[in-house]
Length: 307
Image (cartoon, rainbow, N blue to C red; front, side, top):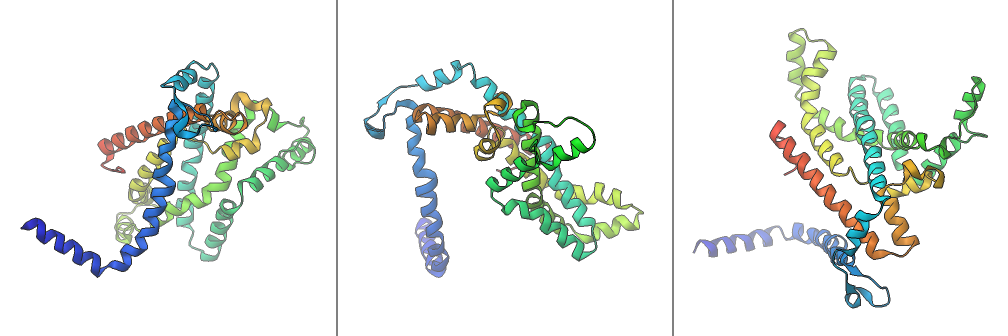
């Protein structure tokens, strides 16, 4: 009887809000065809895939590609490069949007605040190809502004983009320049949700701006910081191959070649789709484990988590 009542209520709810359910249909179709349906192709990682035999006609290979992957002497270096580049981004790049949002929150002059926001947002909307081209021009040993200043100061010009020791810093700096302003939007939105009465109470207690920031502002946006940190940790083995490919060259492979560029070369240049899929699958599984550990730790320590 109760099940029948629930079914009737469910039908009434659908009929009452049918416009919302119709709007939901394109989203569901998108996820079915472009997110979940491609998962079927992951079986390539367990087959000796042939483009002539197709997905169904190719023979099963078991864990052969994963064994090749772990026996490959170069793979640990690619994992190390991926982790180090992400650690750079985590330690240096992650706090920058938070700091920018806190500084913008302190600015009272609206025109100046909007001007700074616009200037910092703009690089996010520029193509990564253009951004990488600008970085290459800035660092050019012949006409780049950086080397021009170095030469003007009396030092030797530096070939930044062919020296492996500079690559990680250049890559991290480029991503900060491109994404810091846009990343600050999330924290600015979180700052707007802090109860102003808390600031008033802090002022009555004699708290300075620094103490208000430490005891009101930062605790107010801490859940947002925690969520963003969990997502960032979950992507510790993911580095966008487009920006790496646009900057690196064989001379900098020792520090610049990461898992995503390895997959790109295997899959598209060498047509080893099965092996490239195995590498990508390994990458995804490790990322899932990392984000689960980060989520569990955060839930235990701060009661803030993704699920």
